Length: 102
Image (cartoon, rainbow, N blue to C red):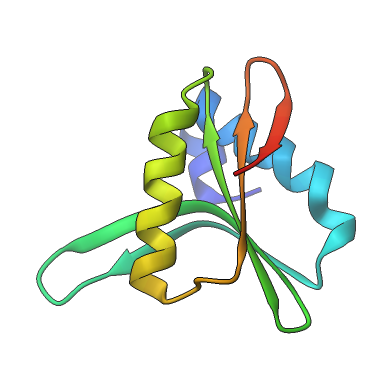
């Protein structure tokens, strides 16, 4: 149990991220959640889940409700910043439990 879980309730969004992690865990060698992208002066963004299998990297964006356009915009921006043009990206809607490829 992490310090955050001991001191405060976990947010609905973070619950959905953990739910997604448990769903896709078997597909990857390494999974990272809530990955911040640092810049020189400020943060450039954050990706909810990154899965790595061999050389392949998949990006996941989690939303509590069905906001696929916002998720798609965020994923495209992160792929551009990290120069991951050929990686796959996915949207996970927490309220419906639906996972979609973008």
